[in-house]
Length: 246
Image (cartoon, rainbow, N blue to C red; front, side):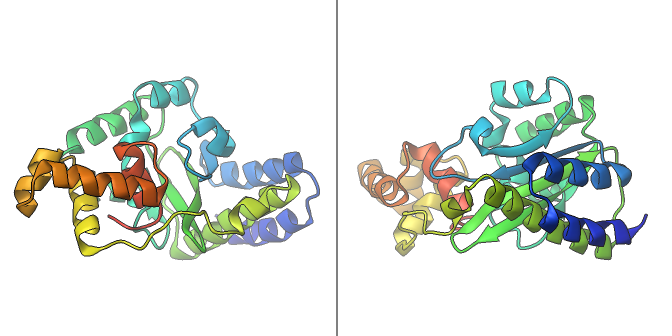
């Protein structure tokens, strides 16, 4: 593989004046590396609408519909791993990290489903901003082994692609100001968030912390206000997004 094509891509992306040209140049280089599919997502203010989050994407036929209909976004190991990923990672690494998670079996089923659609393996490149994770780039399909240098260069490509597309669409300001959520948490609030992320109910959390389930609900109402979340599941998603829980 030719790392010079990645270096050249970094230069070309800066010179592109249309989103379509950006996508064409990126697609050409990524597919030349053997990847069949790719996606670039942003995380906007309190939304789990995948359509609004997707900047560009090329996925196997029917996979996006399956992913949405089965609500895989709630347990996707690659999405959850983003909460504490400080650098690029391989998809199979994210699944292994949740081997003891109560939702592991469903995660494993999602991975099997992805395999059946042609997504055998891939890489995810987190994109960080001042407020935590603001986006990610994923490439995948057949299994491709990248060298550390290639991973580093693709990591740089992910950031350049993300910001270049936003600039050309006039949307970069969305990520250049604070998201407006209060991430200052007390020890008790952090404990409850962590247990909630593990799938525990109010009653179960109350037993762990030796407080009533009504007190747990009181804390959760406060957490939802702080995180500007619509419900408990959304609060967990926002907390993962800001790296508050792992």
